[in-house]
Amino acid sequence: MFSPRLLDHFRNPRFPGSLDPPAVTVEVSNPACGDLLRLSARFEGGVAAEVRFLVRGCTASVAAASALTVLARGRRREELARIDQAAIESELDGLPPASSHAAVLAIDALRELLARI
Image: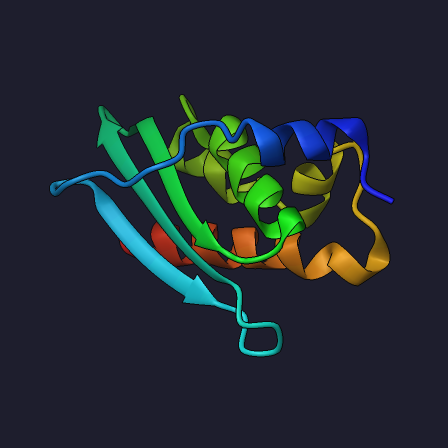
């Protein structure tokens, strides 16, 4: 059902945790399934120097948030804006259709973060 890469992101999440101010932190939820994602990023010279996440949700949501941090670290705002649902799914070697909400949640958090910087 889940790819080995997705399961690896779930079992060994990359960059979990939160960041203190002056990092930007946002929290988004999916009211349909109840998943909650908190995304934090610290920017240096316009670059996402550090990105962390906390998630309460399913296996796919944990993996998608982990994948997002991998894709976002070291990127400029313009590059962050180009990360989409397909990029998250690709980083996880795919998501089952019933779990696509996890990539949507990650992208919602990224868009909210970008709106605050």
